[in-house]
Length: 315
Image 1: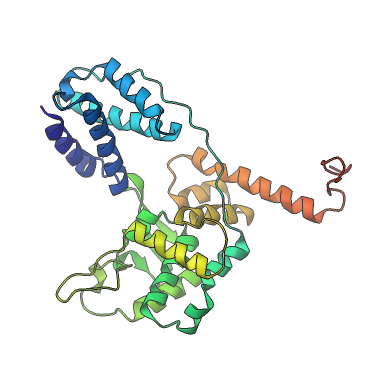
Image 2: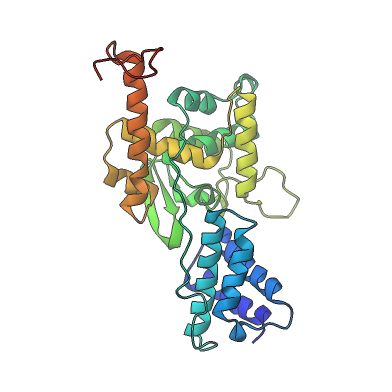
């Protein structure tokens, strides 16, 4: 079997059996193609050896980060395990190769006040609040922050996934796991205003956030993740916010702000659709750090001594 044929079968498995996201499928296939190019046009998946896999990963290590290398190894393991399961190979040449240790950084949420500025949007948008593009962008930003959605989950939503009467949105998360997330009133109202102008037969099967450019006779084009990132970046810049604003920072902000308000970790895990509580626990460190900064600013016995660079005697 050639690499081309093996990749076609692997892609069908990733989509049909494992129901992985488009981004993950693209990443897995790209990593296997890199291995095929590294080995040369005469190579076949059946003949790949552990030594060749190690050489490929060593070459990749010189070009990428530990996180990229770890994902590349995961892609190859998934590919070769698929071939073993299909009877194409007797064993997995990537088995036993240790994954690099990836330092796990803390999330960087946006301050509550800055989130409010982002939701309000730039002044010129508020002056033309009924324009379709303004209504759509306001609704998608409110939904990203108000429901803590991944950008891939957001762009996959159809109109039928939103229940404004119950105040909730039905989300298809990673691994095909469905969850229902409550909508805050601000997000529900923004969605209501956006949808009010789109009530016509057949709308229920349409994407919730489409492109506004539509050719006659053509169906609505669903916004892509890169479209949302671009719209959010532009909105933040026009609203005067500094720093890099992207959809996942709004998800981090959603989780951190809920934790600051006393919501328990298990509930936040369910709302975010995390498979493991350990993933959600990262936000406790962010919240604790935030509390320390508040303490430093507010408590008279916590003020730092400029000469010593430390905290006051009450700490």
